[in-house]
Image (cartoon, rainbow, N blue to C red; front, side):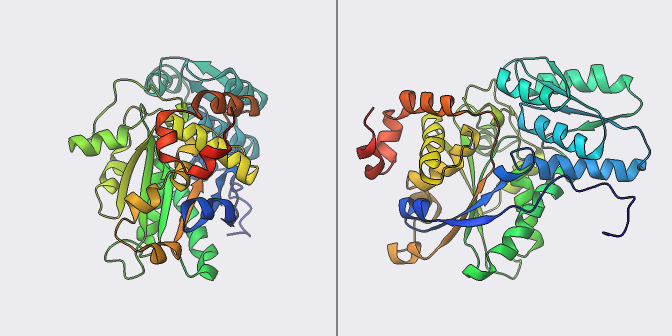
Length: 359
């Protein structure tokens, strides 16, 4: 494959996986961090979108003048714009009106044509498909989460985890944030490919699918027993802002290996704040919600409620640090001021943390 110069470059990288001493201490088991924040675009979306874009160029031929169109709450658009640079193609990103000026500035810095339309992602997506792509014979639609090439790209994360965790005796669970479900669907497909789901023949792996209140479209669908749509996104984790998940994600979520969890905005925000303190890594709330699982005892009480404390201490849990670029140090400080004393944080987060808060 490396000798075929007609293939487009791969616009994502293999990311490190490290054991976190701090989060392992907080959780009471071995926490490993899959650092997707180190992708070229700052999030796992580089895998998903990058794989789709590379395949589009391969299908059309390297000389075809493709123009990529992506609808996004931010991170998928950044991945598209970043990949477009390495693939030497133009990109138009359509974002909802709720997208932050910070994110729009980053998109434009990358040279993308940015348009703001609609109150949430689905409205921006409808406008893009109906008003923009139809008038461009060279236009290629880049969906942020609902496409087989997106899931395949995200599935490469599991390929890497399989290799990287060999020296640690394997892994028992993966924790990942869910927005539209592209990352989750890719992880599930990857686990199935490697025989890690029931009937696969290898050691089974549990999956915690985490959402914030107000962006919990997967949990809503599971509760209702059918693919369902939120009326609006009310969470601060706007990167999780899909009012309805991909149907494939919903189907995967029905499996016994999957546990759906909803955390508050406060938990998501403080997960990002504490993670910055512990690991000197800055991520947005959409990522902080997964990291919160290491701080609020959920791994112990929800994911592994039936094992002894001694057994739990030996388990290996991989948390996908999905990244995200809609964050600044100033935003983290504001999160700390607003959420550190939130009742749900006070009730759930560890006493050592609460004692350290001197706001």
